[in-house]
Length: 252
Image (cartoon, rainbow, N blue to C red):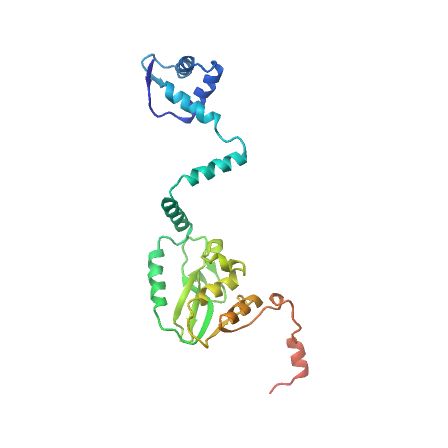
């Protein structure tokens, strides 16, 4: 037998470990069994003693329960240098981003938007970027002039200028963890309103975004907010219905 150190397949490794225990933990008998199993000539290579013992040792210490597996993973992660781990996590988050290929482009656009001088009246709303190709988060909104495309959530001034925006990516939309507890619609307004750094400003939005907690949060930031509401988001207050208004108040 020619004994060398080389690369072996997982199937060969598994057979060697099984043969090792069947042959009373004898390395030579294991090597012979390996030759017989694969019909090898005496001059062909087989795993050396060190390789066999390493395989057996790893097999004995492999995780056997879910908790042992979790602990093994924790140990593997803790052995990674912090700077390398941070880089790995950044790369992982980058790949989760559905628009990572064009991200450098829209980061430049976002940076330019952040440099614009602000107005005193703002609005948060949806905007569609025309697109009809293959994309998991492609949207269809029938009431929009552009019905098919990529949806953006934009912070705009009364002039129509965009000061900040967030690209909709479904469950992976980039929302800060501290805002996610408020729900996606309200958290979008919160994150976009970080761009507002002027006093005595007013922010408008529609009932998709309006929640009681959002209005409270904006008030604490000294941002005057106004928006249409959905009654079910406001603990069903006793508003006068449109029918009652028409009944008791004539036009003009």
